[in-house]
View (cartoon, rainbow, N blue to C red):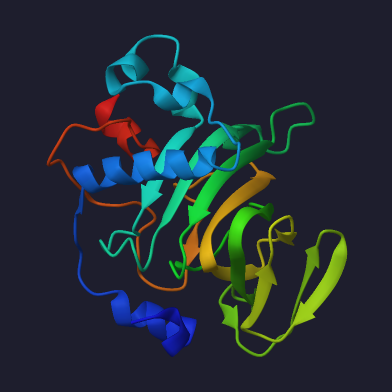
Length: 246
């Protein structure tokens, strides 16, 4: 069922059924494919990306774990990655405990891949302000709503966002389309879902400190991370592996 056939909220409801496992072999394949896609744009991940699980366990990498830097592949716990999922790699990240300090690392950066018609479902954040940047590939489509007074989705209010320093106003549920080079600034009161159109999209994210354990509020009852079936050894650990593998 393609995204073009249903409104986003109907599409999400249609594919959220039950709980499933994502095979480690599939995750390993996605790691390889994603690394090749990133390199095709002249972007190179930092050296720690290529550490083996055993090397990452060695001393000297405590900050990588603490800051939850590294590989992140999610199907939101529903094993439908081709239709609903996202690839992410966190290259740098501050600590939530430092928020509010005058002199601290209060920012984060990610590189992401949204595949053609692959949905990243409707969500918002309580704390994070983020710039979402189309770094290359297809068009990045973002569906936008404002939050109401209780933090839920306001399906009537217009949405005003800043696109590269210029304010754009859309109706509730409007689709903002970013071509390569364009970016949008999203605040905690901006509900958003996104996907690639006319090709896979390389996405940059620059934000305040990123906390994927507590600062993702989804419109639907889904999880932030995948449930993994260990059918083969991990090529590289995901950030969601750190608490159990390190």
